Length: 506
Figure 1: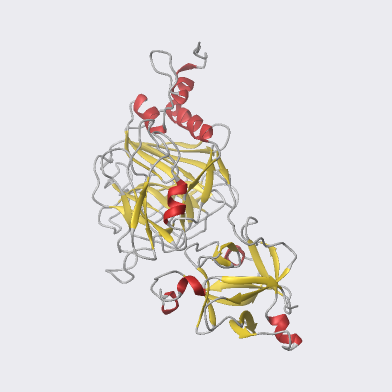
Figure 2: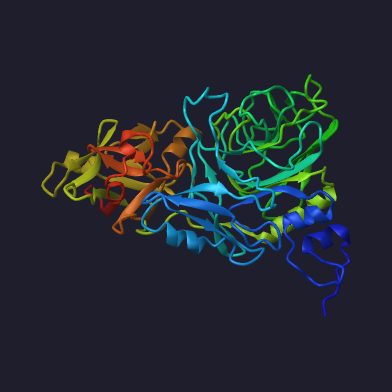
């Protein structure tokens, strides 16, 4: 027999206990509904957020033929069917084209259109995220999150049921607390329906990063703050809220909620423990924030005006109707912890060993005598043989080191120029000396995987996972299949990004 634990309403909600005393697998949105604040938008590429949900979680589009498929949970209320994605995307690259709304209101997220930040159609639509850039496991089952690189963003300006004006709402998002920058703005939540800045108080969204342009918390960041338009707020006014801590949990629960002249920031470790309240009090005192003028659009990875220079990783999130109680949110946190988010390998295929020397040979027909080498800072392919000069052999050899920006991947140090590493700059692969910056570390980190052509290895940028080492006119780029640059051309892409790995010439 099942006996009800004496843990109160909060625990019961988290476990999903219903009146008969039986046990069901309640999802976050079931818990919010039980608390009287139902979800009006529910987005996740990793799992169902309702116990009965078995529909489409997200759509992927593959580069080889522009075909699409939808990824659903393995079972109702369960984890996404990552194996279906892996099968569909085998031998090519895939992007996440739609993140479906599980609430039934149709508040799906698609490629963000141009906005006020970049002017009318100057840069076109934002980029889509790699479908494979953020692998994780939930209770041991593989799934994929949404890895947002600068320039990537999703949006819905034609929404149903989200809060407008000064109406109450809540929201949470599960993020990677180690993936961030100081650019504007890695957001999830309520924004303008025009993709333009329409004034103070026209947004209410979760922000995560270490920007100090408007406000900040204690320490050096990153922080959970609220993007309320024309300001990132950590408390009632602009500037410092010392009660808003720097947080860097690998899996991070972030919460923003607001009602008339009241709002709160909460957060915690999504893998264990409970939530903390970083701020709860009155609205910012500057003009325009009390009352609020929320417009109800939904954004992911960008600011309200399409400011798209930020980066971060999103796994799941919802928006509610009404101001959730702390008890309800505590139950949601218990559900998230029970999902057991965990890291998994970012690499596959040929094993790279830290400390080893490797040389990387092109596999494209007609170029199979050429290896990745460098001439000064320029990275190119050169014909290298056993009879080549010692200098050229050294220029075509690389020391494998632990990834400077992510220890789950690798960086490649020049054998003949110690302290200098392969890194991308404006998507051109160059050899630069380590300058000790976070940006350099991330640009110099790469994640090898089984070769897309079925041969050798393809070497993916960690910070731009749609992009791979590619030779084009004998120069090296980090290229995406079918992107906007000349070196992104689809012809021979799969072969050009597949490299034979051998022991280094030197």
